[in-house]
Image 1 (tube, rainbow, N blue to C red):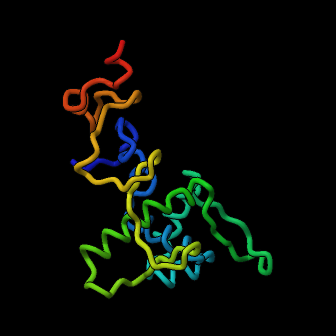
Image 2: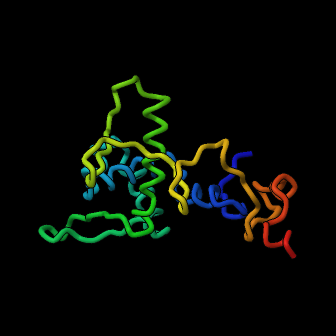
Image 3: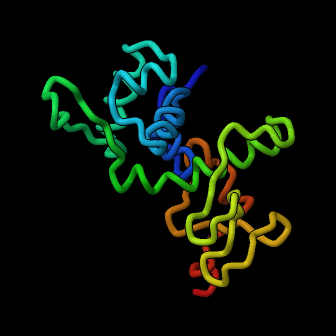
Length: 171
């Protein structure tokens, strides 16, 4: 049976997918990050049907990811932009781009490059520790149960695998 919602999952990834997990949503986000604002431009660039684009933009507005304003020059035209919540998704898109460039793109054929304006170099996303800034390698990290974790749909075995949150273990 196919799920229609992840809202009951006690998992941050599932909750994020609830908002941005539909197929066209990440591409709409990409185009908004690239500066496309008008519905017609988004539709033309993506080649998506207008009813699908309308539905995705509506959901993104309901979730607080995107906002809509009328065009200053033509009140019949809508302009879409990212909210702060939407702009905070940029690391997700950069990480997906880096993975796609590494595993699904021929070497030297990246369709989009990311230039760091501060140093001027072409760059890619590398996960780093928020505290010490050291690059995170999978072998150097450990997952632990968090204070909001619970056994629930989508996380039924996590409590058994990860144990209790650290502060509970110290009590």
